[in-house]
Image 1: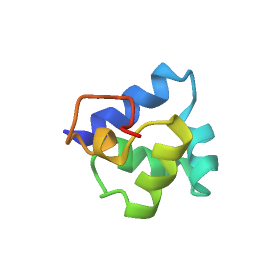
Image 2: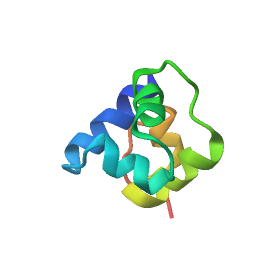
Image 3: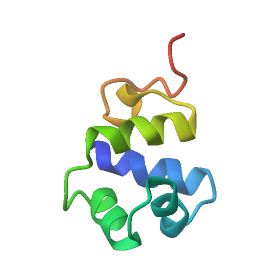
Image 4: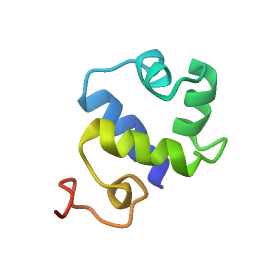
Length: 71
């Protein structure tokens, strides 16, 4: 499930849910629901997180296990 990758990326970066919510300019509870898979994360947020974590949207969405983006 791709939403687990959201939590893994955040934890590996030593960030709190509030810090990532601030990156997305949303409330912590909204981000928490993305991370738990309660709500679908919008495409714009996946793109923003991929840029923030220096990875690909494919990695976040679980389409690849390669954390480094292909460039």
